[in-house]
Image 1 (cartoon, rainbow, N blue to C red):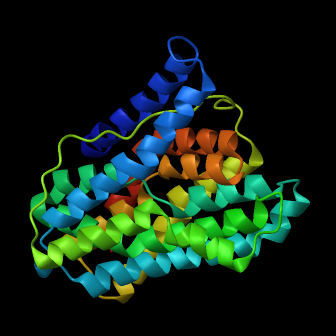
Image 2 (cartoon, rainbow, N blue to C red):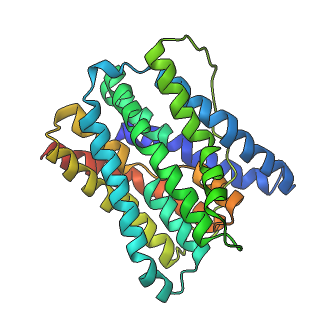
Image 3 (cartoon, rainbow, N blue to C red):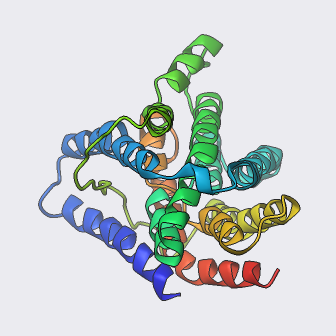
Length: 293
């Protein structure tokens, strides 16, 4: 549990720091927009590339780990879409639904890498890198498509959606990082940070939408991923890392994407904050239960 809390604390403190700075030193909205774009288009993609380049993918069961996580992300995506009519009847509008979708399917890469590395060293980082390749392209493609369909004020053409997906920096970061890993081209990158710009409004009175997103990501997603991992015959460190990667809270990059494409960004900020706090309890439980399987 200490390892999980140590990985989650910096994420939570960044959220709190963003809340404080927005109301004190950095009040202009334009400055936060610049920070969000820098994080989404430069800093986070570089983190993905750096991690993938360093990972030794020859020592891990790529098909088993990647398959379990990819299928679990796909299953959660289909479940969210199936829940859309029910959520609509509960007064959850299109932009709010996109926030639930992103919060239920996306993952906090920093936490996954920190916990996996602390538990299993280089092997854990390699396993988490497999998870990155399996999850990030899929959830980014689906998130863009869902936002374009449910949050955009105007009906977007298929060509416009394809262009948006093709220009997604996180997808390209995975492609570049994997290519550099295979070709062994050296790449030196300094310390990276993922910016903060989230808000804490609604933290103590979470909405129905926030509660649904927290349950889907922190409870149901690990159950689906572990079940698939066991089906693939994974055990020990492989099973543990699949559990870690499926149980982490949603990524802050989802907030930036919501801001850019008309999603309910304040709701997503609330969900990410709640997930980050509650994951300190749910992640150790998920890891312990998986170890007993």
